[in-house]
Image (cartoon, rainbow, N blue to C red):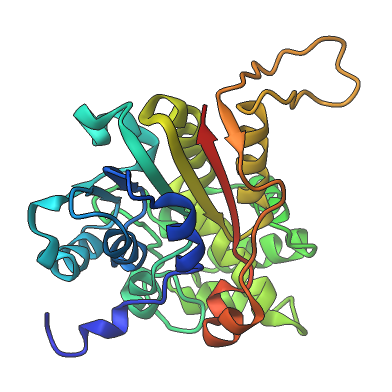
Length: 310
């Protein structure tokens, strides 16, 4: 590994909670759906028996390269696969129905944040890219170059931005003037409207656009739909979310597949397709301790939910 490459690693969020829930003496097949730079993967493999194998999935080939180097000592117990976890059964392959432990960490990797050209950071100037998979065709620049004002306002609002209309209008104005080509330009459009608590608004705007570019919420829904097919009987799935839009999706899916109706209140009849295939192991989401947040501020908004296949 090249000198200084460790700066691209980040501390895995609530790693002890993840391993305590997912890894047992009988765990044989582990799937890390967002392996990133292998923080959680490394801890799970260290906690598992020598017979356990891990399939690590990621959309980012640069992350997979780092994960490969960090996990090299585990040899052929590690299989790394480039792809989107929305396509879990294909990526898991012959292990479908045999997965004992599965993790989805919805957070962004430090690898993506610290490299300006990836376009994820609002405090470093870079291209408006924001793709997890640099081989995909749609970039943030293309999205912002064509999205309508109502669509952009709705997108920002759905990620909790109360000044969505004013910010969307500011972004569109910059686009019309030909002044929207870098992350600094996008950040400037937000700062022109938001004079206080700018960091929170910047984070929400960049998150919303990143999620749109990578279809994050849609892919999460698809992955949760196939968990029941991928897990073994008694297999467990753990999902770490970082904002309410993600958490609502996970909470709803886990309730639905633990036999609880998720139809809108007042519905005449249940049409949600509830099925009792999971047991909820976390009645309420688990959150990081104050000590972990002090040591790793990026963990502050994390929530963990866990289910077990019946």
